[in-house]
Image (cartoon, rainbow, N blue to C red; front, side):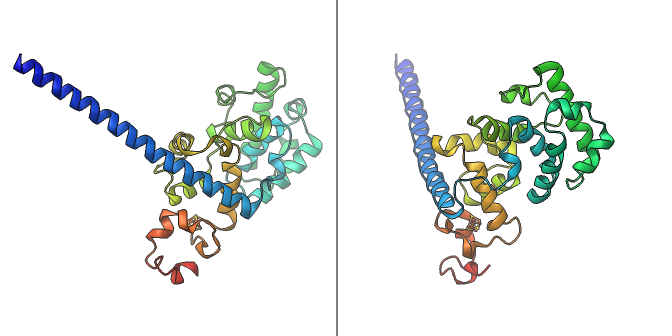
Length: 252
Ligand code: SF4
């Protein structure tokens, strides 16, 4: 009897401990959600709510191809390549029936243009064969296309179809970890973690805002913290040796 009572009490205590820990976790997550919401609001004030890139404002198919072209390529060169390509070959039909030699010079501003010419031709052929020339409207189907990873698929969902997704590129991964709203090692881990802390009305904008912030202020090397409007919300900034008085770090 005594043994049973002790076991029941231990079980209850363990149950209480688990509930308390889940509650603490939810409170911490809520605080991170509020912090992320404030970050996104400030970044919107700084950069505006419109996309900077031409290639993310086109048809879903063109956005898909544009994001493939953007891999390891500066945005300005991606836009140059995408504009030249779509001026001549705007649809999957046109790209699928063009030769690789015809595609290559059009996308030459993009890095690895030979490989990308093969890839976008293959994608266009698959869209014609399996999807009636349409771009699939689901992450799962997009991921089946060659060279399409989670970031590209998520970009197509957000910018092409206006559906919620969180495209995580190097900027989004780096900045959200510097801020401390997530602690992750890879962009795919960041995508999962960001869903937990991004408020519903921020999901559609987080990629665009962090990309703008990463290109202009929170650079990979020597971030310009002195020009940043979220220093009070940033773990990286707080950890800088002189963040207490802000003098040295604000000039970095
Ligand atoms: S304070 Fe510095 S590190 Fe933090 S988000 Fe701003 S620029 Fe990036």
